[in-house]
Image (tube, rainbow, N blue to C red; front, side, top):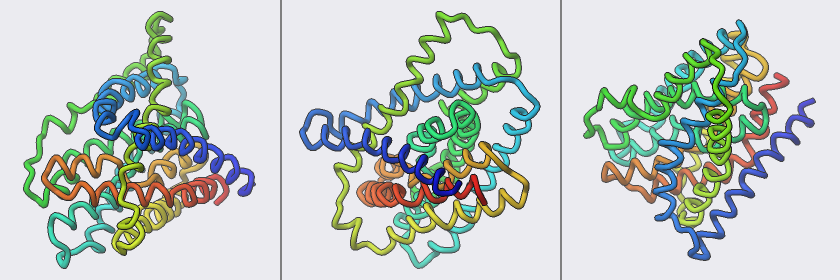
Length: 310
């Protein structure tokens, strides 16, 4: 069973990275550059991804299992981020410069949940995977807009309380949950366009991701030892620990797989963008995300397959 699951998940990961290679080639050919992709990221984050999440909640069957699963997913997502914060704080202590330390801590805690975990969950699990992963993305946004920007700015940024709720990821979940609970009959002329728009999230996100890989400094990716430490924590240590904790707490099946997909995803691509926004080293953030993304081709299939058999 483990080998079968490993083959299935490895195939889906491979397909996603094959799509990312389109973005890589497009950037190198100067057809679609990293600079162009920044506007596409705004489109994905503010419109496409929220629509995909809302539609998933709209179409999810109302059952006691799904109600319970939402609550458990919330707890799992919070626990994963809290555990990541604790680990990164211990590993990347005061001996590091505050700005550099902030990038390492952010890169360790925050996974590429929206742009890689959601597409993979959709491929491996289906709409139920998006249903649970959306909760993880919502928790990601709450913590990223507080702890995340505080760290990556070198403890200089002020926390904007409004962004805790007023961000696309959180809003889409807040809209989606009532629609799921009420089980409203949404007209076809609304639901079908939402399906079409939401459907472009996975391929477009991976193409954009490919442009970031194309602009990475592969020399630094290979020689900088701290990058390997971040990748080990992000890709192996944190998800394996959470897998053990979740199993001990009785989490099973597709819910467990969705949480492990989210927690085992590579470093968030917005590490570089936030670093640039808060006058930190965006190249370092980009290199960390690139290295962990390359290594995740090997680690994610193994860890996610373990979620189904451990």
